[in-house]
Image 1 (tube, rainbow, N blue to C red):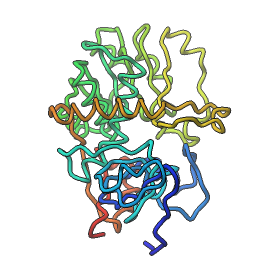
Image 2: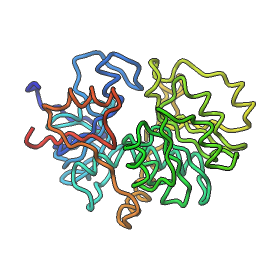
Image 3: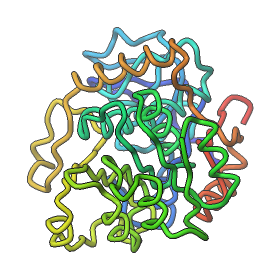
Length: 327
């Protein structure tokens, strides 16, 4: 930990006095110099999402001053600090029902899951959802949202303990990938039909096996790439998508009024209006008691390095959150 200058706020930005920040697999990729959606050279401060109170704002974002918010940090960096800069289009009211740790564990996991399941896959009640990496922060959010929508949820996780954990969150069945055959178990659980929606947070060598578990005319959501050294940029043989008669639907959590410089590279995020719609829908579910962030660990700044190691070794479950106050 180092003392650095308090960051200056720019137009359309806010500076948050941080109460808590989440730990993401993307943070691990950055510490290792691996592939991440946004990369900058070191030195940098980790932290992609935060909860706290807005203490300053630039032109166009003044209405946020004094409000308790959840927010995505600028360029996905800087959250694990006392003060963080966030872009106004990624700032939302923190749900009053959640404390700071729960609120920061709410933003990225539930927004990402809602975009995937509802905006992209158009999930219907009674469908089967297969969640790969179900015990993770985003995975636990996907399990809860799918269950709240009336879906049958099959959670894929490593070990009996994590399977039990996911069933406690609403999964109707679990598969232990360390000792069970994924295809055989999915076929057994779906009477040979497969899952209408597959929410995949892992990718990697298992992807093509996962594709065999998609129902005819089902939807495959490549949400995360934690099992891939190249961050999902290595590519997969699309011929097998054609053979399976299913759709692949991209999912990117970013709310931007326009990114012309990045559009040429294939980035085409949802606009800020979508973020507001998603947040309103999720806040209603929180108020109704239908969903709640699953926190596996609350740690201090001194514990971040070890927690990142444990994430990398798949020793954690739910969301790990850094409580900044007192660190």
